[in-house]
Length: 185
Image (cartoon, rainbow, N blue to C red; front, top):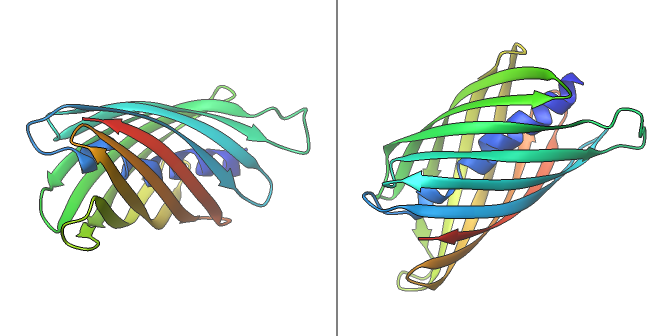
């Protein structure tokens, strides 16, 4: 069950760095909803995400995750609530402080971490932006979490973006993640 904690909480840190605050200018509000798939040794999991960015400075939201296991008696599922603060943003790089609380089948854990990201428009005037990131955190299950990957944002118009977020989490066992979300600004 500890590995499942790591999957959900590390997934939270990886997805949080791609939360809507990254794509929201300071002083504006946004809403985001999405889904993700996690591939790991013992479990695959589906996740559903929702959140909001308050003035582009603070993100709050939640993730529901349901693991898909060959052992159906385990039936692990749970949720994670998160709170992120943007210490630095609206430049070529950003710094995010991450806090999360997750519970799986009535067992819980906390995560505290920091995420660093970059922002690159490809080419300079296009509607496509790439956000590489690195996240590190500490879990109260006495484990460190490390994730890296990138977000790729495609702006459909001034108020709507689609974001794809592939990444890798490294802990006791690596997890591969792909996420997709819709951001309304």
